[in-house]
Length: 164
View 1 (cartoon, rainbow, N blue to C red):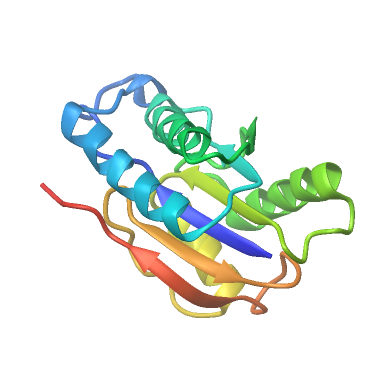
View 2: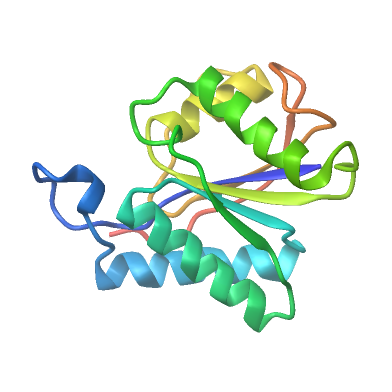
């Protein structure tokens, strides 16, 4: 299966309500660039998003682009993929969602996971066995793996949209 990890686009300034921060217009443009890249290169079966506004908005831009491209991915929100969550727990929850949706038939599936720094880098590092590397805003990295397990994935593609 392919796991496409995506960091949200540029959001408004930091504030007390971190979960409520929305994408800026530039962030929407970044998300659209990344969505175009993903949907032109990959056939999405499932989009998993953090419940925080900026990630949810990025994921919905991806979903809209996928639908416009003739794809019909399912959409699921997972509460354990917010910025400071534990990457092992997050990957367990992601694996549970994938298995509940597809059972054991995951070989040809393509799943996008839209969340935040630092958890996105920590999850990718857990899967590919490399040191965590920061994600730019709305950057995506595609991993190929048979299962969601430590050290078994390999990077096969990536894209970084325009940056501020």
